[in-house]
Length: 569
Ligand code: AMP
Image (cartoon, rainbow, N blue to C red):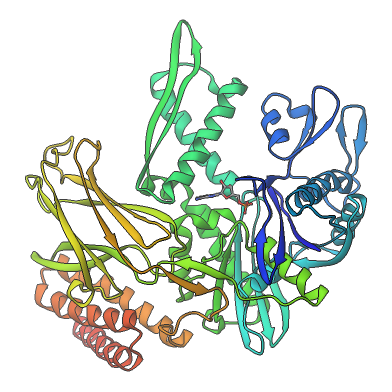
């Protein structure tokens, strides 16, 4: 029996074998686009092949059929009209055959997932789709519940989980109450028309604006050019999840009035984040709504699980971390968590044993030493993590940094491993120099460099530093011990109670803000005092030292209180 995630954009099939869940795929093909089309020769095609023909033959290609499930809206393919469940059945049959091919065995039954907000008609239609595909549908389960199962949430625990699912075309957030073995969706909220496609669209508009600066040509009327631009936009978006800049490049995009148009445009991560800022903010409103519906405060949520490909955008986990006061879990591949959970449910139905999932993770944060000018003083030795601990490996992450002055042309990169914001409290892994960094385009500006960490499965980490153009680059290879982490472990012990976590986040945030104000008003002594108290608290927090964290929190709160009192006088 397999587990199937029948998604709006992509679908997947997974199985539990020898106690371990895994997604089934041919080579790299694991995500099957939820697209069905009628090929030139009159045959039905599914998945990537159907998606490929979409640009050329949209009238013969069906996308996002999931949005219509449960309705009687038919879609036309050639000379036949199909019900939504009939289209979904093509996708399910494709997945069934894929699984049979990989397993070399017959597949007769499945657990299929649906969004928590699906009503009875939508669930029934999904079940019928399974039956039409020749599958006995053992269970229909909620996607957020499946995600929780994939994370192997401990039995016998009583807790609340929040599942934040941001996919290609839909967004939803669900609050799940766990009482021992029972997982129940208490509330679910979202936007069925929000997802990665909208981020691509924002980037596409940005690229069009850039092109319009140089070309007087109506790209929007050119379907082929638009399809290539949309693809380029998605690629840029994905690249920006692990790098500070990405280039959208499409050669020979089109030609007009004898001119050839090449697309070659660089986008920065910060710029991209600004483009999608309001969309991400709207997801936070849905969190509030779901919490209200469940009658819970953010502090009552014990864990946050990230699901859906778009949660790989670093700004997403950062936002949620600040909002909820806990670090969200993203160790499982967010595209796969729901399918893996469906497979776990299938194994449970069959009475099979399921082992906890082992994932390769970076056991410690890795990063570099940075110097900051705080209150006019140079403070050296702050640690900036580039690969945070528990990041699933292999991975590549890059960040940008600046020199301290426009004249500085050499930087020493010191690599550290550990959780303290202070380098000397972490383990030094090695150092190297990047010299002859060229000046910024505007010579008055700080010179820029990019530091990239690549962590492979053997625990080997390659650190590369380069200037913006990539002309100068130097690297260092260090060796760490790669760790394995059981996906089912509750958030690591460093986590304090949600209340304490929240108080720390609040105090740290207000302190940082007030430091800036004080600095702006020339009160550097107070600012430095506050800065020190804040760092002590952050260090205790990172170390998971609850006693010290409480003490430092008290001290920081006292300081903040004193400053406010004086302000009022
Ligand atoms: P899903 O529906 O969960 O398969 O999510 C698909 C969406 O995730 C698409 O919009 C993808 O472009 C997006 N996506 C996949 N990988 C990344 C990534 N690394 N960064 C940002 N978005 C991604």
